[in-house]
Length: 290
Image (cartoon, rainbow, N blue to C red; front, side, top):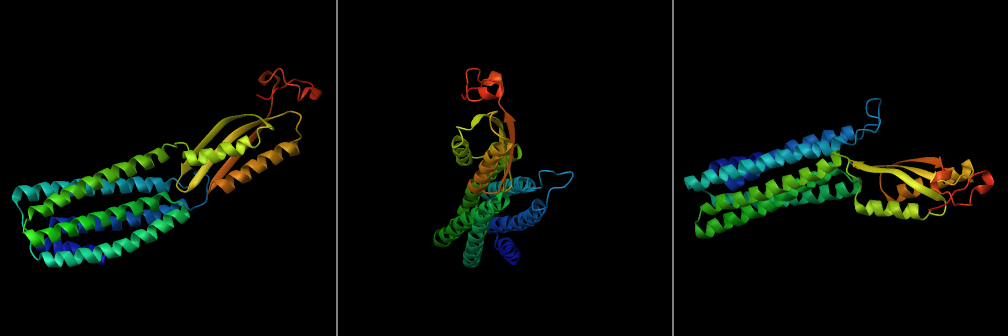
């Protein structure tokens, strides 16, 4: 908070849009982090009567709100850059602005490293979003610092507005990319291909016992992965054999896919599924494994 206020003061006093934009973005970071804190806290709440699948979708919802905040900041900076270019605004005390941006970049760099490690460890969508947001701060900070150094050397103050506009465009595209990512999650898009590959390999390892897999559905919500399916097994199997297969598949999925919530339903095969099969003929009907 102190750094954001300090940058805002220096930006307003010196007339530097680049530094003021950085301060404005830092203030949005504080708001976003506050939203993320409450989102993570709520998402960790256990399932209840109104939310039987838990509260994990609060994370992508918070990330989507954050994407709109980032988008708004980018549009605002782009607008201010246009105004400063048309008004030919000049800045003062370039040296102080340079010092402020160096301090800001160093502090933000430590924060990005911390958030990135936490996001990977917790597999948290909202922390990945937070990390992305602060990463754009570093890139924009380096751009601002470069612009200030060039202004110090050349005296071309229009560079301040041009660099701000470039940063604004980058921020807008980052916000749109983040919004697309979390929207897919909110709309229950299937799990990533690497997770689906693990799932297919596990099911294939039981191909000799499984007649058919259907109603396979996957989705993610925050750091959770939801997987449910129907397994059709041979009629000749006992209840214990079928349950052992189900338990093995479930355990291996949970080992291979982090934070997986797995539901597997077992069904007996029917004669019409495989009319030429002789595996279960001792139980009064013919089946065939496809």
